[in-house]
Length: 339
Image 1 (cartoon, one colour):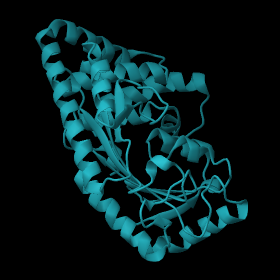
Image 2 (cartoon, rainbow, N blue to C red):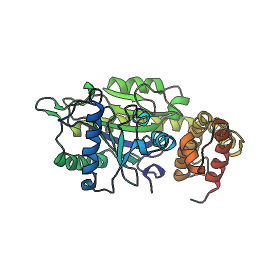
Image 3 (cartoon, helix red, strand yellow):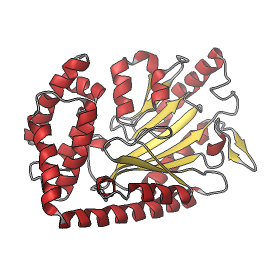
């Protein structure tokens, strides 16, 4: 089963965890500076070593992938919008069937190795990322500086090259008007808290991404410990806000049931409206107000209401209006489904 359709530790608040390592090959300029020929050479090198990595990983050139599939991977947060655009036509991914391991090739760096999990799994993911990185390191020559560590296209990634991020759902802090304070506190501790697609993006459906903003001068363990501490504090604050809302149960239940009623019975829904409704519906499910849903159904609703994954679900290309009509049908199927 794909990782994003499961639930795990603290998954009432933590939607997912990701560890990303940025690496470059010593022999070639960074992707912002290399030639088309050098870009193709990097692809060739990675393609050749993929079978030796294990984990059921497969090499896929983005030129061999249709646009809807690319966007569906962006919606799952498995690849970046920048890689999906594939402007230099020299992008690729190395990915396994469960999609919990994905190595982006020729994005901002030659290699951006990512591992994912449902719920809060920082330590386990760190161990998996190090394991894969050691395999890559044994067959590739990384660009490394004796003093500064791994060299990357963006100076903020120099050092360990590690970005740890946790996706969190914070509706109660939003409803109670405390979200601004939390954002300020997290940012003041040397962390970033941003929208669901990272830097420069806004929160959608009360979902935020917490990540480290420093990689130089820290070890991998330092980064994981810092992210874990901050995330635990955010979880505590969100749970306190939910307890406060539960005391005003009539107001909370009214908002939750209105959102669920619209989601379950509407005939036409946009993706943006679904995100707003799903925030209340997930909150209501996690608090036991909504009995018709569980973690798996919530995960499927989050995945398949999105434009590209909706089209993957129904198996055909749809324009915007057709998607808004088809979306409620798919939502009803998921709500009434037995698995």
